[in-house]
Length: 81
Ligand SMILES: [Zn+2]
Figure 1 (tube, rainbow, N blue to C red):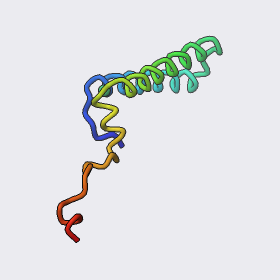
Figure 2 (cartoon, rainbow, N blue to C red):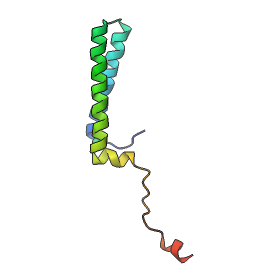
Figure 3 (cartoon, rainbow, N blue to C red):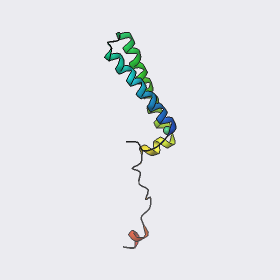
């Protein structure tokens, strides 16, 4: 799970969830295929937006690469031993 609180990302995520819900509701009520396809296009558009944002936003990229070692140089203790 992403712990970063990037307001932009959460806004996009909220939008994506809405689109997903809309799409799901359409499936549930047997919406015509043309409508479904439109909803699907929206979902993939928003998720692409999210991917792009994550790639560009410094907040989100640093959250994704949270495994980057903070220790860039060995500790003094390590050198001494
Ligand atoms: Zn971000």
